Image (cartoon, rainbow, N blue to C red; front, top):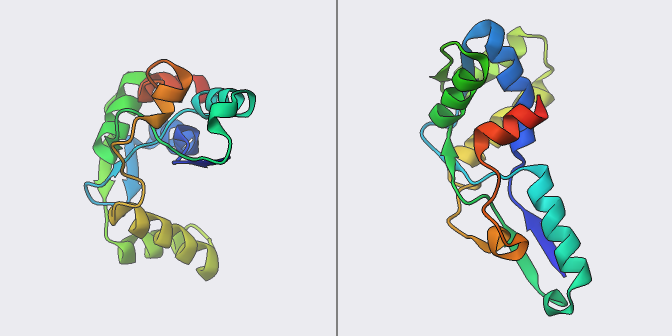
Length: 150
């Protein structure tokens, strides 16, 4: 069996923590959606899949039930921190310049920009509900998963 996990909500913990001070989450993803899920949900699916022969030889595409935009991410950060957090949409070029200005090397900045470009192109959007079907419950909501990660 092969488990293909979408993006982990916990990947945003640092951005959300920083937003407590800055009031911003900056990215070059436009209005793209991410069907991320919490690590606990992916772990639960792995536990089911390795103990149930029904999953032998299958490839499972695992994604969160409710895809979220970066505006949704900012709204969840606002809820968590009790202060306004906005999504600051920038171009890939602006993001690269920001990252280089923060001291990242060109290769790392290029990697981060490429991630955002992939997200903007829809690489992490999904309406698949295999994950919740495998674990037998809805996936963890965005704000709840972020609170746990923080």
